[in-house]
Length: 240
Ligand SMILES: [Zn+2]
Image (cartoon, rainbow, N blue to C red; front, side, top):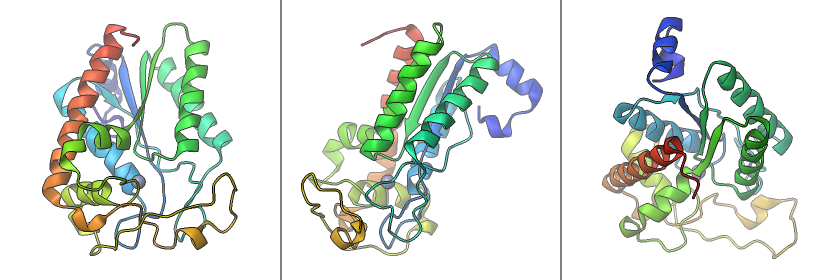
């Protein structure tokens, strides 16, 4: 059930079927010269919608902004602060809780380390604030990289490479503008650099040349399957 598309009465009827909601998080961030800025949000929302076709679950409107560190200076990236992301999670979760939802899944398509840590931190605060709430924080990209490892040829694929290019080639082919060269940037160890583009001109981390729509289809499939298992565990009260 996509919350954006429901009427008031449909929302009420949905609560009789499930108390679980998934919030897709993405980013507005450069994804090389060939993929759209919305890539992360597209991926998270795509698997969320497919999951909702397989089981009763509310899908909240996606959050198109995330915390982007290494790509902040690249054209088109619109990064927000960790404080804003944290506040967004807490406010959206509070609103969902007030509407009767109790199992809250934060699914992120943007895999930035600081971004993901902020979601986890906010998730911990939800656990502390609402004794009857269950929370999952899931990294959609990580699920694709791990469960789809057998489908991927690039060893160190991380951003706008084989995985993400395949995913968008499958789900939104009209938004893919050609391909891009492989790249594996190296940042100075431990030193925070102001001009990140100097160390990472291409905005690609991995090999987009190895991407195919078929890989994207299969990757999306394994992510949806993994998600379905995790949601069932959360609903059953399993705390691994
Ligand atoms: Zn991405």
